Length: 235
Length: 104
Image (cartoon, rainbow over all chains, first blue to last red; front, top):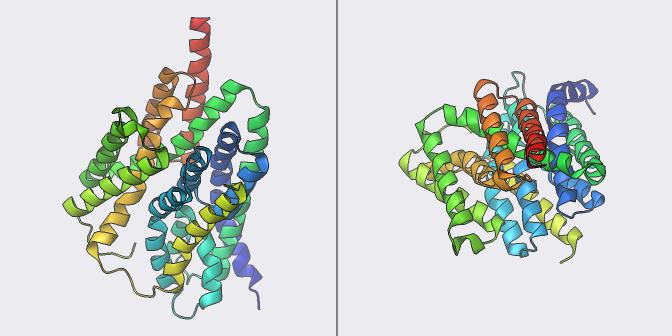
């Protein structure tokens, strides 16, 4: 039997995420059409992927005409954090939650929804999680649709400033993390230095952008994992 | 390559990263290196994606720099995603208008 009450509790918990996703994906939609994707394709990417950084990197890889292997590699590295989050989420669900419910919940395991799921004081039910997920998906997909439509209609200068929206969101995620401690600061600086090298050093700047993100991420995170190992914890 | 196929591959890769550990891995990951590595991935990845790309996302490199600085400044005091994103965005828009007037 479907527990509507639990589902609506999930929707309620997901509303702030929905609003946040809407504005960010508006930026994604307008950026995607600016880079030559059709409105339909932009919406399709958001509806099937539901991930911010992965989609933006994927967009870059697709429009640059890179190989499928590069597309997969980029997604694997950028979204690798979800695997860790999925393990933690699986434990929060507990043994009773079966295979079919898990493969539905997996689709909605984003950074923000994971945070909502893990912070729930009552036992976390898949119904609650999917409720929060569905409303967030609506925000993400409709924001993309509106952004894509507006992006193809708005004047060029407004479109250019909208593309910064996404970077603004990344800044908002990175800055509070970096403030937490030295290790994260070093991690950020390493990624920054590598990224600049690949952008400005002749020869290195010939490497395609998707691959550059992968190399910078792996290098910075691996160096920090060796220098500053994190004590064992659940997520 | 067909765009629908590319989107499908992208979606499937992202989905499997989420689904495989949720369905198959019932025990926590033990390796301290892998746990630490995954702990550092988001910040490293977002940093590499943002800089220096933000400088070239706008019509003028100066507006890109201003957008970045305002974003960092606001994020130091308030980590609301939407607020930071919109402030960056507005800064870029306004500074490009000013630069446009100055250059003529």
